[in-house]
Image (cartoon, rainbow, N blue to C red):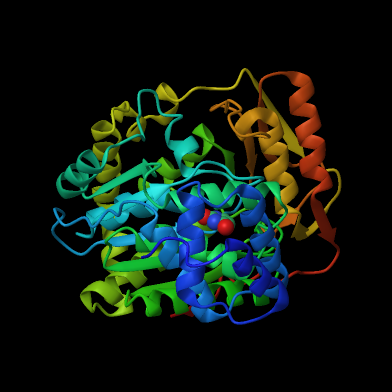
Length: 439
Ligand code: URA
């Protein structure tokens, strides 16, 4: 790639005016930004022009390629066996990775998962895992590869030299109101997935009140844009558009989510979160090993029932320096909040809708997430919420709990959870868990 071919303002002007943008010029512009040669104000102007005008498939691919080329990649050459990666676009009570990674490892697959921290109202897998005393997520590339080869799975933080242009552009998008653009999100998500050498990329594109994409149509458009990118780079990928019109699991916090994951990995409970994990595990076995869906599903059920998935979780935690007893008795190890307040339903009816984003925000305000970058996270706090859309609730019945640092915070969060519920007199059909698969 050459140096700047022409004035970077020409790239901004071309996008502003809706003129075709040659892929190599877009790539040079983005690489120039990553090197600090294109200033923030020009990149911000470009992002706004791209947000308003959109990017066509070729431009989205050029942006993605530039982001990948801005840093190092993680080919995973030293990891034998079929490698699967899984990524969620972000949701509430979305603990899929905590269960999926060890389950996939127990099924003979390899998972090198680079995860993120909480973003806005959504939770982050790294924050959840770090609630386990001693556990580290800052694994170097060699350490990550070694652990995946030995244990089958690792969940680690993305190193700053992997796709650095995305880190810089994402921060700029956050600061310039240009985050919710389908091509920009697709390039951001897929650049990070394509930089890692997995054999199959599974995307969980969330749709609904707790997701960044509020409608199924927008989520489908995002899923298709991501799958087009995977195809353009010659990589195997599948995307599920899944329900985020209510919290997926029951725990909206950090330690609370780890405890829920252990319960699911032990085969002691089920529900929509486990069902989604099973859907991804089945898809991975079907695509990577040619299993039939029925056989894949029964293998996954066996790995849970026989304790193989929980054993992988225990080994993963131990390999990352965490206390492995968390797999046997989570609350002997995990931090507990000083105040636990039951949330009691204020009326009777059928749960018709949940403002999942509001529940996520209430949990963030308890301290489970960050209002500003760099804020500390309080691992023990959060919300547990039991009913799902279509369930009957009775006035006075406990529908969940708030785990808080003090009584006032607990009461405020309980009020917000109750305010986020819509009850109906008649029956309500539960929404589908998976709206469709793409790719
Ligand atoms: N997650 C990402 O990684 N990037 C986005 O742009 C949005 C969500």
